[in-house]
Every structure is written in C-alpha cells, then in structure tokens.
Image: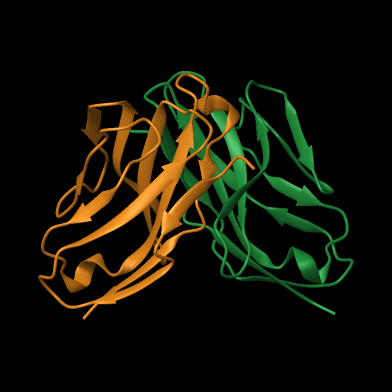
Length: 114
Length: 111
C-alpha cells in the first residue's frame, strides 16, 4: 500500500531534550515536506526537500532541522525543543512537479513539550 | 504572498442539510486548488481538486468549482451525513512546490 509513515504518533517530552520524528514513504517520491498544524493557523510548512541532499526552509523553520540522506526518509529533528513547538506535525510527499495533483500525508505526530 | 481564506467554524448542521464552506484565494500565476479533509484523530486526505479555471472537482458527493473571476473554490454537498463530521481545509499549490492552507473549518453534523 502506498503510504507515508510517521513515528511516533504521540510524544511527550521535556524542554531541551533532543528528539527526532521519522517520516518514510514507499512511493519513490522526490518531494517531501514537513508541516505543523496549530488551531486557528491551519498548516504551515516547516521544511521541504526536492530530492536527496536537497533541503530548504519553509515558512516556520526556526528550531527545526531536517536531513535527506535517502530518498524514502525525511526525519524532523528538534535539537532543543521548547513548549511553543507543541503541535501536530505532518509529513507529506509527492512526485516532483506533480504537486498540483495533490500530496500524500502521513497520519501525524502529536508532540507535547513540557 | 499566496494565501487562502476560508470561513471560520464550526459549521453545525443536521443530517441531510445542504453544506457550503466558502474558500477564496490570492495567488500569482495559476494555482491548483484542493480540499483536504481531516477526520478525528487522523491525517489529511485529499477530498477533491481542480487544476484550472472552470474545472469542477468532485468526490463522495462533495463538489467545488474553480472560479478564477471570483478567486473562489467553495465546497458544497447537497445532503450531509453524520460521517461527514470533520475538519475541512482549502489549499492551493503554487509553482514553488508548496501547499498553502487555509485555517480549516470544522463541520459538525448531528442526527
């Protein structure tokens, strides 16, 4: 089944403790992206990647890092999480140049930073 | 920059009522337009899309028409069901490889 898999689904952590949220897709998509969803703000793009070793900032990149060492994986790294990063996070992917046909989203990761 | 504005919710309806959720956009160029749906506790699913002016997207009884003259993409359904209760997001895709989302509209359908 074609899908985007995120792990974990739920995570509670403390301020300053580094964490990684994993994202993997099995559709051979070049394009991958991370979004965060907050009430009243919709979804905002954090980072995106056009292909292996090619990443760029989205609208709200502060406090986040990403890497794209393999085509299928696009982890989101919070080196020193803070409470304002408490949010619902989604990973998405598409074929490059085919985003106008829609993205495939993961099921989401609900992160709470205390 | 590109943006999407959609009506605030929640929208509360009785089963079999008609639904309209308004969505307008601002974009340079000719974006593709989408409606995504998020059921409770789940991720986003593509509901329907339209890639050019006057196109009508449809799925599961929902419809939306790409209106370039009014920069709108309103979501409609003639008879909603309890199972349609969800959050609906209007979005556009720009040539810069990015989906821009509205803030979402929660729909609550009661029996």
